[in-house]
Figure 1 (cartoon, protein in one colour):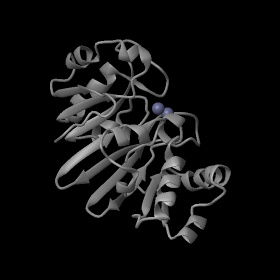
Figure 2 (cartoon, protein in one colour):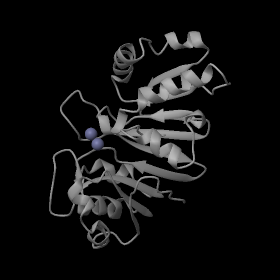
Figure 3 (tube, helix red, strand yellow):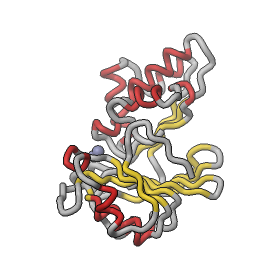
Figure 4 (cartoon, protein in one colour):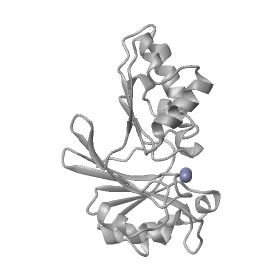
Length: 226
Ligand SMILES: [Zn+2]
Ligand SMILES: [Zn+2]
């Protein structure tokens, strides 16, 4: 699962999946719309482990992730990532390396996004498995290193907070997302992270003026295949 924002566990369930099927969670950064459901997921797994065999959970996040998690778990669960192993449940917390194997056969790589003040790390992520690739920009301003990072991706999921012609610091608009997709020559562009004004705009048309590949405007529980 990539990012665990508010309501994501509910959407997971509505999509026909269960928290007990989760092997790994990756958080791009610690804004609430990306991480608020993380501790509820951990608690859910721990409670399930009392009555059933529960697969361990691997967590991945940017620098400072372990400290963040210790802090939050101590307040919300009165536990730490290591103390819950007493319940027979292993929680592996990893701060993301530049390139690493995330799960067997899934390679994850990262570059720093441009989002928030210094010391507030946010990552763009690329996943490769079975010859396919998916890139998530995370929350970020347009930056040219993403053009290389996202090169030839099968699916590019972008932070499209604004419609064309508007901007919010630390995010992109539909035209910038399309420019990135075009320069990186990806196959399929997904416009995600839509602020209210973006939701009221015809993002599909705006992006198609710049990018000629497939375009999808994201919705909760939408499934996209390769
Ligand atoms: Zn953010
Ligand atoms: Zn966000």
